Image (cartoon, rainbow, N blue to C red; front, side):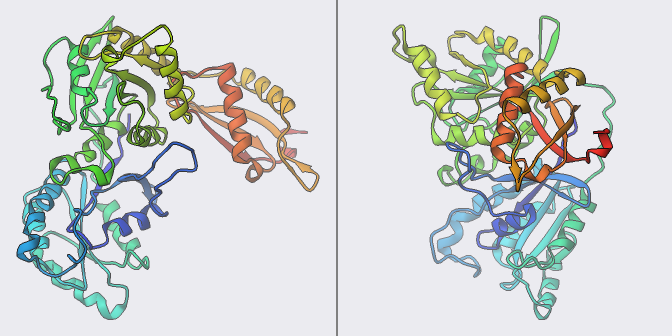
Length: 454
């Protein structure tokens, strides 16, 4: 599995990191998705420049009270320095390229120097984005930041888009070439994700049957993504225990705030993600946030309702809880739900068989003849959209890839395929081939009738 390079934006508050993040990914940071129930206040997004794909991470400004702007740190602002330092350290450990964002107009501040002092200890490429320099008259002010002795300085204005292309050129040039692995890893990689204190490390230990990860009742204990090998019935798995993810405004300053970098990196290389939710609390907004994040990745998904042992039950409890989970995560109708207790081991033995099923679905391939029979039946059942008396015609379908299953439909008017019809086709596909727990991708390509001899 090819892992995208991780590019981290670091720096003190109010220098424009989030504005630069939004500018690079090409859209405003979405807070609310058009899918009900998903919160998308993401810290990261995939991006691409001149054919090079990478994951961009906004480490987020340290929350500060109003009035702390771009002046050198006062005594009242000293409290933020530990968090700023930690932000730089985590980026230094986990990112492939680091961009220190500074305020070009304000010049070098004490906090900028603090970050630079830490970043100079890394062998990772570091680029300085001197932000808020939108005019040619201001560009010369970027030269001051060469004093930090980190690397190239690019004058930018994230707000106006000035210099962002030059910055992206520098980022892409700095991304290290991926080296082929000496040893092929055929294990199924499982990322264990969830809110802090959902029971991720406890589950890891129960699956392994040993105390591989430190278990603590303190939310956010796990700071690193830990890889552990496990062999079960002849199949090798790689278990990745990750730090818990919280909404940006709910994370305490310090280590936990930036450990999301590691969770993103873990998810980026996972085949199957286990999303742990707390049975006592039910589905929270943050659970929906993480689930929304998972839908944008290529990994399979299994929802684990943990701490099921402490829930008072009757004969209807499990069914009612499953209905609630389905309702709150209605954008994931295809995922299996397993009720477990990581602490007692209840139903933990169901997890790895479910992982195998989901991973098999990710790699499922549909014969072209069967797919085209399906296409004709589906479009007859529900005719495609039309405009001005001209209807969309479906000519041919093929499966282009697996992991996740990716289908291409050749049509005369691809731009006329709306969200509703795309969802209809996906639902019909899943009725024929369930693709349990895995996302599927549908693409529509333009072809003329003559091309297919019709």
